[in-house]
Length: 441
Image (cartoon, rainbow, N blue to C red; front, side, top):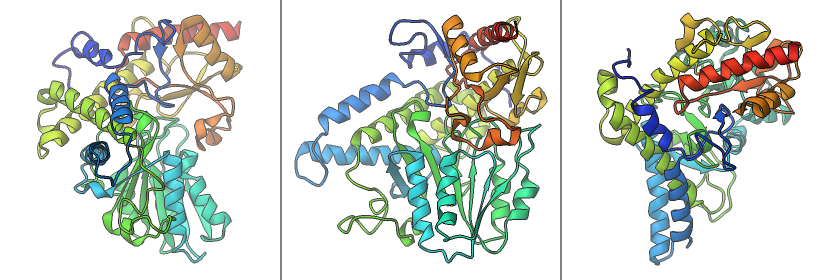
């Protein structure tokens, strides 16, 4: 599929960028390029407006007769329905909200742990975020499972070793937990093949979709994981998270809860009073995708056949985003605007897929190191000299196991998304070349 019938750089991108108040400059007025989206994307204006309105207009709690209380209930339901449309879920009661993806995965892990005997195992991967690792290691440490097994990935290609994953799954596997996209490598996990492997066991299937939902469409009907977790702030919204769970499993598992809380989902999974502003915010994010889908629906054509209404437009938007971002990945790897790309630039060690012919297997999230340079200082130089926002965490690793495979504890990550431009990629690559020269001199 090609979406090149019109040039998004001159037509659609300016409209998209107007939706993000800080896309051109930060709050201090400094013009900069924002390539930190994997850590938390820029926020939509409509999200900020919706959050403020819900916070002020619906401050009364639910279950009371006042208008403010009833409107609060409506806002929460609208948010659940919006997430349902994002994931193509048919029942909004399958959508659970939480503080973070980490908190939801721990919550899920504790509930599953109540069923375990200590003989079972859990299978995950070596490129997981620790949010999808430590909840399972917790069960191992408490001797509720015998072991947690890690499927390796190929360090050269950055792709998951599915044969190794399959070899780890047996009749005692109780959970198979994978990321849809690596937050360090940008590698896409072949989810349909993971689900085929999962059929060999009675395991729960858990998808960490935190680094997935902003980059490509996801359909629970076509990729039926038992549980799917994502964070709103990676989808142009505010802090907070959501989990889809199969209705029967949300009802049969026994999460920790206070006695008066509902026995049925989603209320049995949600601890404390719901934040109506979170639901208003995520509904505004999905509204944005619906708006974008209306702009690109004709371009994606038959790809969204079978969908209707908001689900069709959201799917159209994310289909377009996936293809547009493929162009960003190609520009990062091959170079653009006279700049050399990451695949050939000397002095750079890039992790994951660098073969441009395999760009369909990644999103534009790139982690690298400048040889013999401190990653923290390199990121600082890119910011101070070139006004490019990238990330190198001082505790390293982007909360992921991934860099262990490369014998590293820290790297620099540049993560453009669909509101970034090819021109910004070129500027970044020129700046990176200068940074290599600075630390090599």
